[in-house]
Length: 262
Image 1 (cartoon, one colour):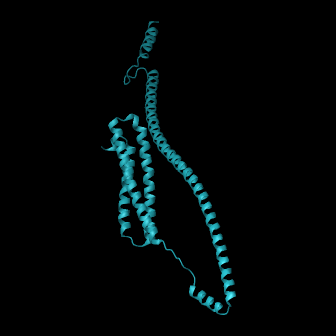
Image 2 (cartoon, one colour; image 1 turned 90 degrees about the horizontal axis):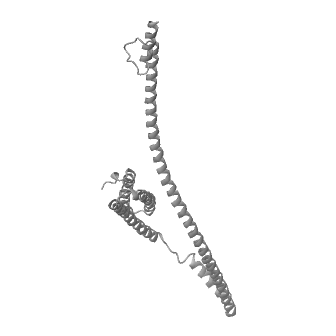
Image 3 (cartoon, rainbow, N blue to C red; image 1 turned 120 degrees about the vertical axis):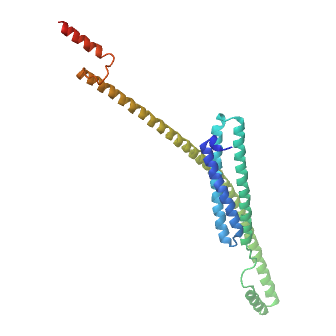
């Protein structure tokens, strides 16, 4: 069923969504052929922006469907809901693809270096120092190094615990900010939809006002014409090119008869 028969605005929104779906399909096909990691990242960002736009349009589609729900029959409402669910399902499939490529990109870029520094130089220095020490000095030096290691481990544990605490607080703050941003986005979407409806109503009112002005101008011209005819008949009552106006001709004739009588 063509949505333009239900609402031109719904048909326009559906057309924009279908355009984005085609662009997403072509974009992911192109992404499979890209080997460079930086180009893949840029392509994913572009596709993410398109998915964000598509999500906003689906919300507009859903609001328009709800605004027309009371005026449509049950079969039309069911068809519109099926269209919306199909759009959501297709968008979710592209979101899953995006997550898959993002995960692959992250795993390819991840590098873990377990050992850093010129270990061989340190080993040579330790061998030279050990050759010049007595057994007791070696034992004391070993104990000192073990104490330093234990202290370093304790400091590391404290840093890890502090990092966990900071991460927990940060996660809670980010969740609160995310919820707030989500509410703001929903409110902005509602305002944008209301502005669209208001703009449409203003255009309709403008067309009605223009029509009313034309009618008033036409009536004004008719009144001016009638007044002009009345003035001409009063000034020149013998003018036969203009028909007598009811209510004006008989009194003039009566006045002439009375004058002739006297």
